[in-house]
Length: 78
Image (tube, rainbow, N blue to C red; front, side):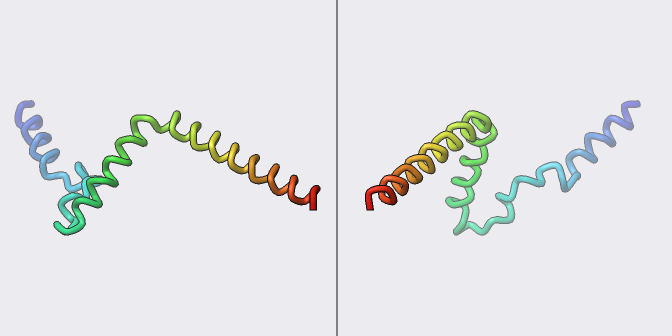
């Protein structure tokens, strides 16, 4: 049994898909500051995803409604 456990631990360490989302090793050194910013945005979305999406939807709805009402005002007064 302990032989299988050791083999699984070794396989987990050698698994190339274990850190598939970690592209930090593939990104050139000059682009790392940009990549760190993208990682921060992804972490924010994972933490506040539903609330963030809801707020953006509400802001978009307000902007579209305001734009439509302004267009309607211009159309009716012209």
